[in-house]
Amino acid sequence: MSMIPSIFGGRRTNVFDPFSLDVWDPFDGLFNVPSNSDRSEASVFANTRIDWKETPEAHVFKADLPGLKKQEVKVEVEEGRILQISGERSKEQEDKNDRWHRVERSSGKFTRRFRLPENVKMDQVKATMEDGVLTVTVPKEEAKKKKPQVKSIDISG
Image (cartoon, rainbow, N blue to C red; front, side, top):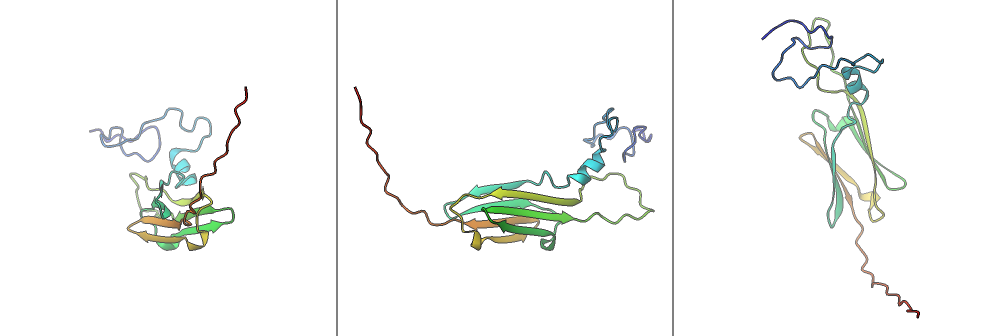
């Protein structure tokens, strides 16, 4: 394997890395678009994946937030049945003597907002965090059984 430094910039240490998913982009930086590292810094957890399922009793949200402590995450409810999950991962301290070979973990802020249906109890929202997974449970109001309303339609002709 060649250990020739990449002539295309970036933080790669060699031209051929069989385990790398990086693809050289000849247009990277050509139009003053931020580099990949700048883009990941700017939209850090924009891709934070959150599952939302509805059970008979509640709406349950699960977010993978590896490496975050519960103090770095906020769960808020707003008027209009808006659930907001946000947080921030601090950038790792760099020593000027360090030589980085790859930077893939992102740092910065994220915010995700969800409009909840009318049948939720916004004053009973609960959140837990375990092993980097945030779980937010929003209980549902008991469904009132209504008698179906039937309306007769006159047939003309």
